[in-house]
Image (tube, rainbow, N blue to C red; front, side, top):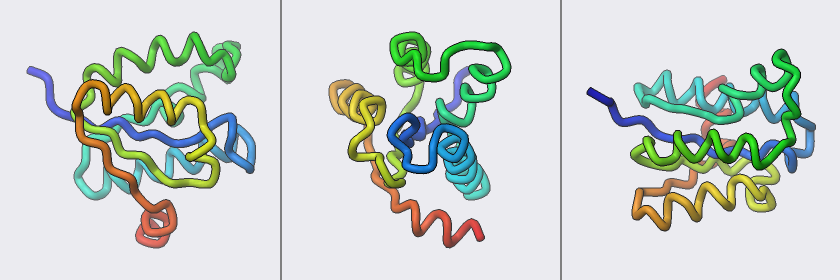
Length: 119
């Protein structure tokens, strides 16, 4: 039996601090959601280490979006974390459109609020 989980969208390649910083911030946001009792999946938090340690190009957008499509199909809801660059991110835009087309709920969360509560 599957359990519902939310898909966490955060910027990656458009994050001002770079890929490693985007990964760390995605992990922090996802951890805060988990602390709140929300089953959360972050494609950045869960695949960045695979890319880095598995010698796969972390910027191979087509490869990662194909994998992410399966997770988006399975997720019950999208949480968009409004980190710097979220509104310029090609991946986040695709994630929003995918959930919108599927008629699944989308929530936009302030990164400042999550970060302040996580401190």
